[in-house]
Image 1: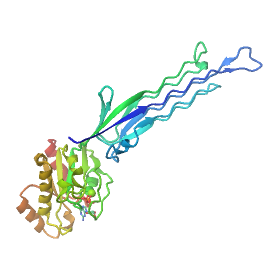
Image 2: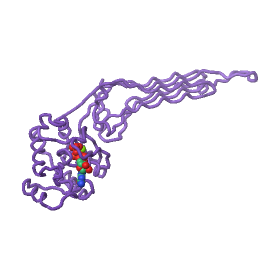
Image 3: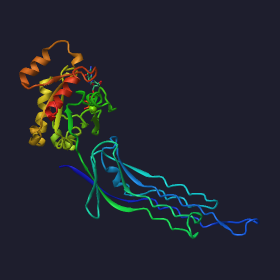
Image 4: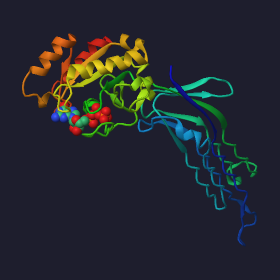
Length: 320
Ligand SMILES: Nc1nc2c(ncn2[C@@H]2O[C@H](COP(=O)(O)OP(=O)(O)OP(=O)(O)O)[C@@H](O)[C@H]2O)c(=O)[nH]1
Ligand SMILES: [Mg+2]
C-alpha cells in the first residue's frame, strides 16, 4: 500500500492571563476588584481539503503554533481569544499521536475537521473570583502527530490523455478539475465526491504506453489506484485524437498489467466517452467486436449516459 507520511509538532495557544486590578476613586472607600479574564488560546484544527494532494508541504514546515489568548485588563475587560489555526491536509490522511501510536482520526472525506490540540482556558480576573485573587490560565496542548496519507479513492478514473477523465469527474461530482484539449492537463490526482453514494472519485493524470516504467507522468500515480475499489476506464470513442478506441483500451490495460497485475482483478467499468462526436456507430461496433466487454456509452460534456453510468457503479458496489 502506498503511504506518504510525515511528523508534525503542534502547540495550541495558551490562555491569556487574568488581570489583577482594583478600581478606586475618591468616593469609594474600598477599591473594587475589576480585573478581566484572559482569552482562550486558539485550537489547532486539521481539515481535510480536496485541493491538497500530498503531504509535501509538511516537509518544509513541521511546527505549528496557534495564537494565545490576550490578557484580561482592568475595567473587567476580557482579553480576546486566540485564533484557531487550521491546517489543511489531503483527504485520506490518517492522524496518529506519534507518542502513543494511537489513531486519532481517519480524515477520509473532504471537509472533515479534527481538533488535535486544544487551546488553554484563559485565566480568571480578580473581578470574578470570590477571594479577588487571580486564577492562572492553562497552557495550550502540545502534541507530536504522525500524518499518514493513504490513497483511498473508492473509484479511480483511468485512461489515455485527453480521453475526458477530468470532464467526467466534473460531470459526476460537480468538481472543478482542469480540463483541456492538450495532453497531461491533469498533473496531479484530483478528488471529488459522488455525493449520492458517498464515494470518493480520483481523477488521475493520463496513462501512456511505458507509464509503468515512468513514461509520461509515469507510475507515480498508478499507486493511487491500488486501493480503489472500482476503476472507471475512460476511452475516447470518437477517435478525434486520431487514435483507435480499442487500441487505446488495450494500451492502458497493458500498462496496468505491467505495473501490477493485481490491478486487473478490480471491477472495471468501461466508459466510452465523447458520444456526442460520433457520426456513426462504426467505432462502437468495432470496440464491441475487438474488446468484447460491456461498456457504458456517455458524453461527459453533454451529460448523456451518466445516469446509466451511475447505475453501473451502483451495481458494482452492490447498491443497485
Ligand atoms: N465533445 C466532447 N468533448 C469532450 C468530452 N469529454 C471531454 N471532452 C474534451 O476533450 C478534451 C480533454 O478532456 P479532459 O477532461 O481534459 O481529458 P483528460 O482525460 O482529463 O486529459 P488529461 O488530464 O490530459 O489526461 C477537452 O477539450 C474536453 O472538453 C465529450 O464527452 N464530448
Ligand atoms: Mg485530466
